[in-house]
Image (cartoon, rainbow, N blue to C red; front, side, top):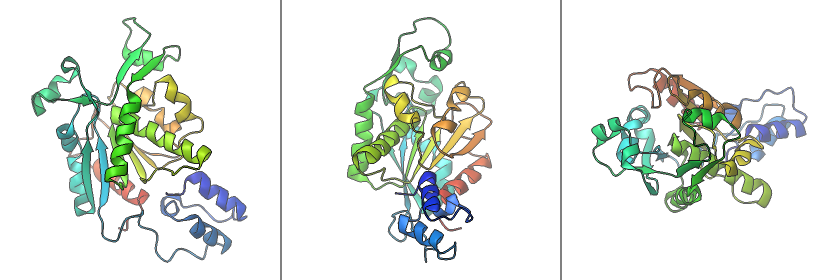
Amino acid sequence: MPLSARQLEAIQADCLADDIPLELERMHLWTEAHAVAYFESGGTQEPAQEPAARRAPNRPLRFLCLHGGGGNRKVSTAQVRKLAQLFGTEATFEYLEGPRIYPDEEVDKIIKTMFGPGPYFGWYGVDHNDKTSRPYVEKLSDPSVHFEYKEAEKAIDLVASHIAQHGPYDVLLGFSQGAIIITILTAQRLKAAREQGAAPPEWLLNVLVCGMPPRDNRYIALTTSPPIDFPCSLMFGKKDGFYGYGQRLRDIYVSPDVFEHERGHEFPSATDPLNQQWVESMRKRLGLKD
C-alpha cells in the first residue's frame, strides 16, 4: 500500500523534520520504515532502491479497465488503445464488464455503429425522485434530489471479487460509470482499513476518465468525509456535458493529477500529445524509472 500524503506528513511531523521537503511523487511508494529512516537521518538516508509497487521484478504493470454505462470489453479496448501503445511492454490491460444489460434504446448510436449490436453493459441503474423535464445535470447538482444507484453493491462486489481472484492489479482505470464504481470501492476499502483494521486497497493508482462524484445518497458521505487520500489521475473533456459537475472530483481526492482535453465525454484523441503527458504522470505515480 503506498503511503498517502497525510501519512507522509504525519511521519514528517513525528520526526520533527518540517525542514525536509516532501517529494510525494517519489516518496509515496516507500514503506513507513523507509520514510522514518529518511526523516530521522535529516534527509540523507534513502531506500537503496525504491520499491517497485509490489511488482515482481520485470513484471509488467497490470491495468484493470471498467467501461462506462452502455459499454463493453470492445469499447474499453478501443478507448485505452493509445495508452496501451504508449506503455508498450511495460503494461498489460484487462477488461471487466458490468453485471447489467444496458437498455438498447439508451446505448449511444455512435457506439452501436462502431461496435455492432452488443450486448452492452452498465454497472448500476439510476433512479431519482425528480420527475421534471429539467436537464439531468441540473438534477445532479441539486442536493434536494434523491438519487439511487440500483444494484450498485452487486457491481462493487463483482469488481472486488475479480480483483481478489485475478489480481494483483496495479491500476484501476474507469470511464464514467466505471470511474464512479472505482471511487466507491476505494472509499469503502479505506474506511474499513481506518475503522476495522482491514486491508487497504491492493492496487496503487486510480485513473478516472470523465468521472463524477457518486450521487447516490448512500455514498456521498463515504466519499467526502474524509476526502479520499489515495493516488489518483483525473482526465476530463472540456466539452463534456458533465464537465462542471465532474470537477467536484478534484476535492473528493487528495492531490489528484488533473488533465483536460478539448473533446467531450470521451478519452483524448489518439493524436493528442496530452496522452504522453498523462502516461508520464502515471509512471511517476507508480515509481517507474525513466
